[in-house]
Image 1 (tube, rainbow, N blue to C red):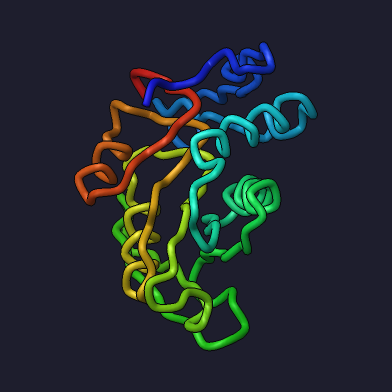
Image 2 (cartoon, rainbow, N blue to C red; image 1 turned 120 degrees about the vertical axis):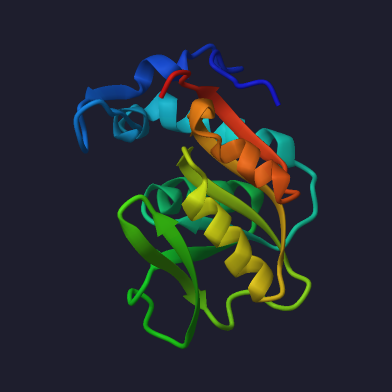
Amino acid sequence: MKPVINTRAGLDLKALVRTIPDYPKPGILFRDVTTLLADRAGLRASVDELIWPFLGVAFDHVAGIEARGFILGGAVAHELGRGFIPIRKKGKLPFKTIGQDYELEYGIDTVEIHADAIGEGDTVLLVDDLVATGGTADAAIDLIRKSGGEVIAACFVIDLPDLGGAERLRRKGVSVHTLMAFEGD
């Protein structure tokens, strides 16, 4: 899908994203969505644009990846009338969990969901703020599938296409919807 910059609400969402140079390490341009989330029209337009392709689509749950995916995913779930499933870092959920490891540039991390969150054959829309290399989203997709669910699509506010994450998810057979792209990052 073509990235949305100017929304139906007439907002330039890209202009609401703060860029922080050299964070978390030199040479990285960190794309901070907290400024977009703090802008009431920006938040509203972002949620509206995230849900647009899924209006009228039948599915069971929205899953959001910790932490900004909770904010966006919760809003998307509310607007679409679906339940919300948090995908959390290891050790953060209080009940029986299932997990999925994934590689980071400096080691391995794990994401988890409650073991009873997704039933066999449940359909899930995955939401997060940004897709870079796609490692966390890839692990979240594997986790949803491991629990018997099917990912209908993954949606993100920001795509960093040069890092290949959205394409990585498409190669897994998952449709990807993004609102904007920052090239060269």
